[in-house]
Image 1: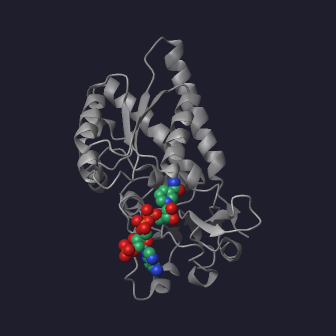
Image 2: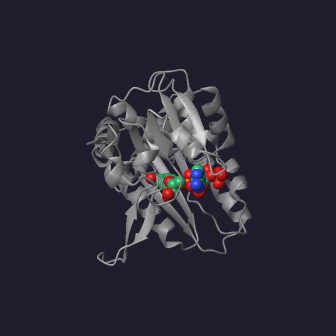
Length: 295
Ligand SMILES: NC(=O)c1ccc[n+]([C@@H]2O[C@H](COP(=O)([O-])OP(=O)(O)OC[C@H]3O[C@@H](n4cnc5c(N)ncnc54)[C@H](OP(=O)(O)O)[C@@H]3O)[C@@H](O)[C@H]2O)c1
């Protein structure tokens, strides 16, 4: 049976570490890191994400603000708002919650964020720096994946990592992070996607398999190698009449059968999911430190 990688526990450890750092700033009368989260429209999932991010910030003593705007907020107004926070000295991180309403060009907004405050790591400057191995802000979910591997002492050097999924928010960044020639990375990375002719041929050769597909229970036991490390990024709703909500959340991996064959596995929920907000807090603290040290 695989050892469970407990993302909830690791995320809590990170929050405690950051809380101690923030307390020290408060004790010495210094400014604390600040995060502004901008939400446009009334998408219930986005509202819930934004509230969780803001609450997590406040809980560790960081300054947190939610900028809520109605669905008809214009692109021009949003650009102005982002620019005002680029200049604002109280906020070191700016996060624009995606997706944005259709009339707003998401890429234009992402590119308006000062890269020094890009705690989501989606700005092309951050992406470029990641690829060439320069100091940058890593997107929070991939950053969480790499941090889990590190904290569980799972070696990556020389290992074959297979990433299933090539999105800009998960697949591509996690592949690029693990490819870097440095500690906690230096893996041989293969990236698969929906056009793969024989996906199992790749997944079966993975020492570490990262599933970021968005399809419930897609990875089965016969698709993995005995003893592989399985990181499940997927979050999918499946109908469940026994649950009050009528659904439950499952990953991209068929946990029940894969855990019997893997050496380590992340559960869903409680694996990669909780790491995302923890890494956002870490990025916000990092943005504060860089801005204050003039980097
Ligand atoms: N905080 C978190 O834990 C967190 C954060 C972000 C996302 N997620 C979850 O992670 C999952 C992936 O998210 P995403 O945003 O990366 O999704 P996405 O943008 O939809 O990308 C899915 C990727 O999977 C690939 N794919 C789909 N079907 C496939 C198949 N049959 N064989 C091989 N590859 C296939 C797609 O290939 P093509 O490129 O060819 O279409 C695509 O590259 C979702 O369940 C999402 O909810 C979780």
